[in-house]
Amino acid sequence: MRNQKMYEADDKMISLIADNYNLLESLGRFGINLGFGDKTVKEVCEDQGVDTYTFLAVVNYSINGYRHSDDNRRMSVPTLLHYLKASHEYYLDFQLPDIRQELKEALDEEDNLARLIMKLYDSYAHEIRVHMKYEELNVFPYVDRQLKGEMIGDEDIDTFSKHHTQITQKLRELKNIIIKYLPSDTKRNNKLTRVLYDLYKNEEWLGQHAEVEDNIFVPAIRQLERQQKQNDVSVKISKMISQNPDNGDALSDREKDVVVSLVQGMTNKEIADHLCISVNTVITHRRNIARKLQIHSPAGLTIYAIVNNLVDISSVKL
Image (tube, rainbow, N blue to C red; front, side):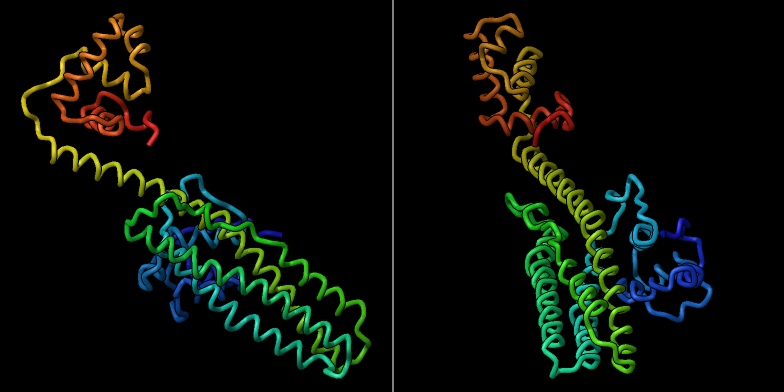
């Protein structure tokens, strides 16, 4: 059952941890160290270089499944990226090996069933490792390039974003085998109970991690991609302005009408019908437009129309 409290920047960080001790692990992944006294969430985040809004977005989503409608626009992608990279490091380098060691100590290595359980765990761990390594080698570098303002051709986050496979199925099988079929042995039973508890927490954490990736990280990258494309259009417009200064040969009102019609994708015949002129007149206008502006491509005319407020950029398919 989720805790229904929504945490805010002015709440004490110690209160947030006291209410949700599981967040202790998340602090380290954000790069937040303990020893923050009675400072607020905002004060702690600012002191330790973490974006407060993004921290609270992840925390409130993890605890309550809550997301604000403008999350994507305000989210700090560098903070999210740091959090996910640190989460992978913690999970692969600490959590998986630690549980494996616990499991090994709890099982009788001479027992065939015990060996099968270890094999099943190793298969489960391998699938998780492959998935996370894929993201580290492909998704995270792609996002780093986006943050640097590099256009990546036709690539986007959906090119890399993989639906999380049913890696929890093997974990569920493993838990069921331990619970149902291992012989009763008080000493080993205590150790196996501890391992089972850790496996349940492991499954819960992995599910939460996948939800943060799918429902916070990926939408934030889509927003970054949209902004990047918008910036690219702005650069093209700036270049056009610098390369095509006003030469005093302005377009007539009728020529502007023709430009707008061309930007909207009309043919010469459609423009003639729309403006109640002949096709030959449309062709003449197009020649004059090309001569005056020194622009000969639809994309160039589109940029000209946007710069000169003949069309609204929001109505143009970029």
